[in-house]
Each structure stands twice: as C-alpha cells, then as structure tokens.
Length: 80
Image (tube, rainbow, N blue to C red):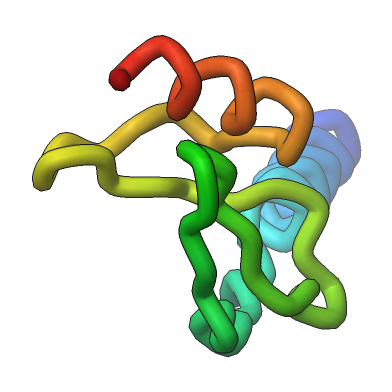
C-alpha cells in the first residue's frame, strides 16, 4: 500500500465517520399536553407547558401551524 493511498484512505474514513456523527439528530423531547384549557369569548387559554416555545392547535380537527399565543387569539376571534 503506497503512502498516498494509505493517507487518502484514512482521511476518507475519518471524514465519513465525522459526517455520520454530525448528521445524527437527538431525539425530540415529548412535552406534556397542556392542561386547564378554557375558552371564554373566543379566547382559548391553557396552563403553560414548561419547555414549550409554541403550540400546535387543532381547530375543527385540522392541524394548524405552530401557534404563538398572540397569533392564536386573532385566529380564534375570526372563527366566530
């Protein structure tokens, strides 16, 4: 085995392993379901879920985009 071929093989082997290692994704943490849901005058509220930055809300069985609380209030008011 020549020196250039040997070093090329080692380089490709290391590059391939680093690429695989960096491509691995962490498992997404499953957060708790919000509790204490209340709807009053088209305003839907719930207790904050620790670690959640936004919420996916189903309106009439249709999955919405992740909603931030301020946007969700406007959408619910337009449904009535």
